Length: 274
Ligand SMILES: NC(=O)c1ccc[n+]([C@@H]2O[C@H](COP(=O)([O-])OP(=O)(O)OC[C@H]3O[C@@H](n4cnc5c(N)ncnc54)[C@H](OP(=O)(O)O)[C@@H]3O)[C@@H](O)[C@H]2O)c1
Image 1 (cartoon, protein in one colour):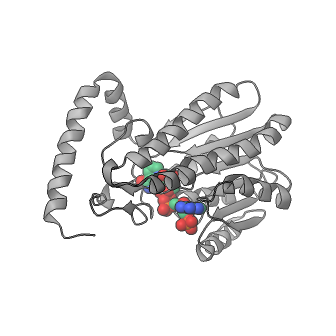
Image 2 (cartoon, helix red, strand yellow; image 1 turned 60 degrees about the vertical axis):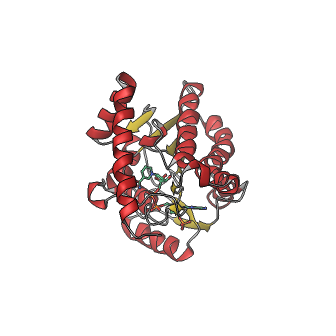
């Protein structure tokens, strides 16, 4: 499958960061786009940039994916307005910083709905059409910490592990159908993610932005992967090395995480924040 002026692309979480850059990457390839997120002003801005970059058509749909069923409604709206959906980028999501003991069941249910369940709902809605055509590509934007959970981020990690698990199983279920699924696992990326982080007072401060990769790298990788059989994509050499170490010598990674956590807790104790 090649991206063209006929290839309809849905990007959730298109108002900023990886989603916005992914929309632009597809716009440069001339695809008609359907962009969704909550912030209407930012969505309109992203749509304008996509039109200027060459998108055949750009539709926007303001929508809160924390509402159960919203993931399905987005897809139904794409089909109603554009008649088909070829590429789904289930990207919308947010992070958290909280120890498990202080994160409420309501907060857990909400992050699950936005980060995992809404994407699953979209996939469930789009699959029949893709299977009938024998073509399509689904991207799940998960995370490198969908492979190794880290302290003070458990709720987020749970949702990212679930995305990885869904994509991993679906990859084999879709073999031979012409429909592809790829799990995208970025490491720390320079977006608004860390500003939008849901924190509780006992959470930890976010990372130093200097060590982050560009969202454009993630976006270009997504656009270039369309039609290819790639189950899971990781980015930086350090992320790949950490994953390898986690499989080969998990005890060593445990020590590293423990050491890193101690440093962050000490830094948080001396900082006046929240
Ligand atoms: N940045 C990183 O370091 C990093 C690393 C690994 C994975 N990721 C993943 O990459 C994806 C994109 O994040 P990002 O880094 O690009 O962060 P971002 O700049 O904060 O973008 C997040 C996007 O999700 C949308 N969103 C959040 N809550 C939503 C809701 N309730 N309903 C609808 N849309 C919602 C936001 O739009 P509105 O606020 O306008 O609704 C925004 O467009 C996420 O799934 C994240 O987990 C990020």
